[in-house]
Length: 337
Image (tube, rainbow, N blue to C red; front, side):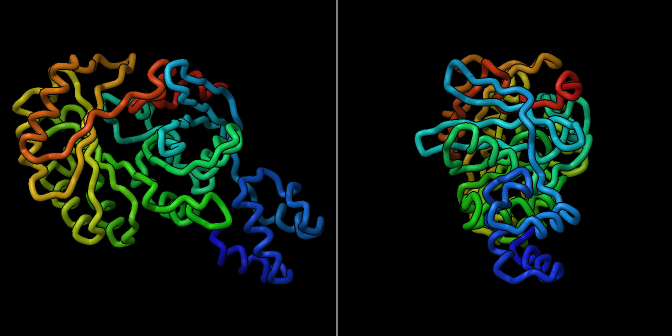
């Protein structure tokens, strides 16, 4: 619930107005039970228990990278479904990569998240709970959020927007929009709809190919909205928000890593204020995609920069615990946890 909705609830329950602020502060702190509200009368806690619930996640498994300290969590939700989430440490602070769906229906060939399809959307509270748990488990303040875990955020549009409205609450996590990135595989109508909210978040578009011929083979969504339509939607989004767009590009050996691909990509992005995140493809046992050798990655980056496109090669974190880009999954084993 939003703060205003909690105020309305308190009024409907016939309770004094100041109780709303108390309840808001408790739920924004990430508690998992109404009994934790120790300054709220038992009678009111009972009313809340009857009418409401507090979404939470239960830890099933925790893996910590021996290479860089990245933490991957396997959580069980209230209905028994499971999701994965990742905590990463950078020089500027801690970032949580959250899942927005149980599974994914986008079907990108190089990504483990969609291997078993979509089970359901997460609520805004379930997305928030992933951050609360990681923060409490490590005794840290999370300063950045990337909506790049399992699922397509714009395929769960209403809950993703509600999450964005709640995550910055001063009584809760207090994470500003400029510290949040939302990743999409290219749902063109939803990108245009998101632009209407004019939120100063970073839009990260999973492009991964410079031509429809290549993108059609690795991203089924391209057959519905092709690259030209996607780029046009990005231009409309940027016109409204004036925000730089980030394009994700997973480099796959022999698929999309040629000099010709780099040159065509630069042409595609001409006129956009953007940045390209080059991501050496991470291994997924169910497919055969492999990252190119270092020299090809460097050449691809150089060719983009020669054409005036800002590009960086993303540092791989959590590779030893399958916590890198494209590796989070709705595991069959996890669902029987």
